[in-house]
Length: 262
Length: 262
Image (cartoon, rainbow over all chains, first blue to last red; front, side, top):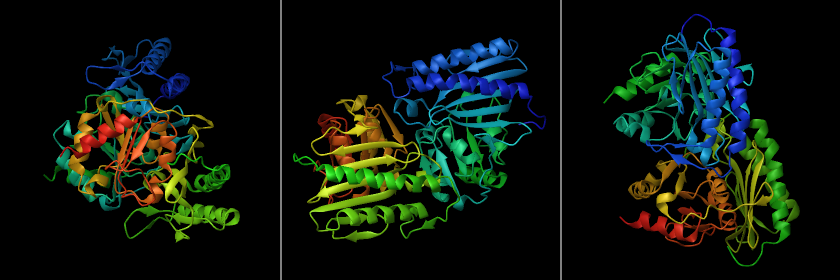
């Protein structure tokens, strides 16, 4: 994130995109779906495509000069100053199994750096909003992380152990999991919202795509947390897909130390 | 489950217990809690104890001759013909991390066999009700499993991989996980509700206590599913804490075969 505050017009449009996504997600949630397996075997749904189409149309209508990168429909103007990064339904496996902890992820990046991020849970009507230079909000009120600094007191979330096998780092994750107070799987993007509100302390993941992580950084950082890749580099649209999101900078450093002590 | 239908008065009281639990769970959810670590390190909350106290008082008021086994306050009249088995907050780790997929579990057992079961999610106000001789309901409407019979097409849920390490069967679970279409962790009791509604196909767990599993059997069976321990024995209050809940009897058999092929 940068020190320069995010323009209000970007925050406003991000809200409008999330507002547009909600009714579509609600309409298809827990309905029989024509699930199509993509080549990488992550399931996508009709809802996924419809939401992204609606969000892209809104961006084109308001800021035709902005770029867009979406999970479903690819990239346009990816070298624009402002690029929107969209995941209409993050946690598609949660979605298709009827678990209301998936989310619509919306990010605006300036020169590749996420400056606005939204996690929206359409079924529970819960929304986290992060923007550079402002406090993160949950349901409109300021959100703060727990302030936890010590791994041994931390609750760690990760979506699935297989994401660490994908980058051949399962043993490193297991070392971290063995050092924290408790580990929970199955959080998807919702876990980052829990972290921003102080209900979880640490989310460590890997094998993510930009549309999976760009929205998360402003939310966690604006709540007092610290987000980086596993090497400690700040997240940008070009990050390598590893992620350490922590309640505090100290916990981020400590978690990365445990991941590296191989 | 038995062929003899569950008496309506037991179903009515089970609803009343769940009704009593909801406002207490809501009051404490996502609030700072004085979390006490029990000897076995599972976290319990003030909410847990308050809910069980209220539920026990209701049972004593209506059926003072019935037995009660609860997670928090132990057993009374455990040899009565009808014994209530209560878990005020199943998924305490979900609860304390702000994840609204924990549940209040309420079971009535006759001669040790669960004949009434409720899973209630207080925050989402979602309720599954199973009773011997009747169709399972979700939000008052009949629920049916997916009908899935083939492991390779099944979505499998389990709360945490560590439960299989606790019984030294992690490799067996991993073999099953490798054979199904997809595996999700973090379901807690909510996963059994998803199974009863056809959104998941298989839940396999271990190291459970009677208050964790008694309520689940009537719900899954009344929706067309098949529940047993890992050896195929029907669930009773004396079961060994292993559980295979499947959308169909064929899937239950196939899953147990994969668990045993060591």
